[in-house]
Image (cartoon, rainbow, N blue to C red; front, side, top):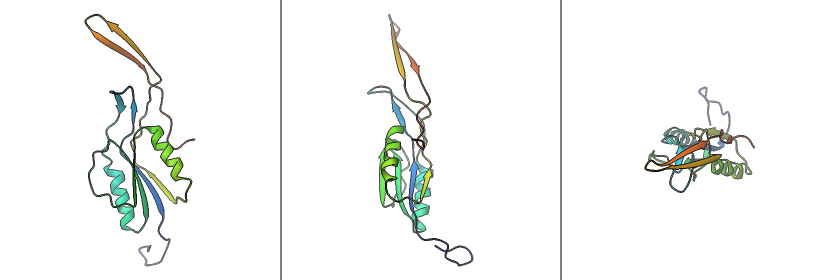
Length: 137
């Protein structure tokens, strides 16, 4: 790689880029999620690849951005725990830089109370603790 003055400053790096949303399942049908297309992380990964870096893209399964993904490795993730586990597995190898652009869920589900009322259907009360951080053990 070359800087603006034409001097070599470092070689290609092995990079991890996260992109897109996580979700936290309530049950087999419902989930708590956020909106993230995955575009920022995907474009960042493309930028790094164009400059000669080796990139692993970890992208949320629900990401909607369908742009080009020419990176060497693409893995999808679902929950915050799934993303954290994938990052831990990759970190066993040499990694030079990690770029977090994923929209990680702020909350998970701790407890769900279901109350049925005649004619009104079921009502849910949810306890939503702060979700585990991706970057902390």
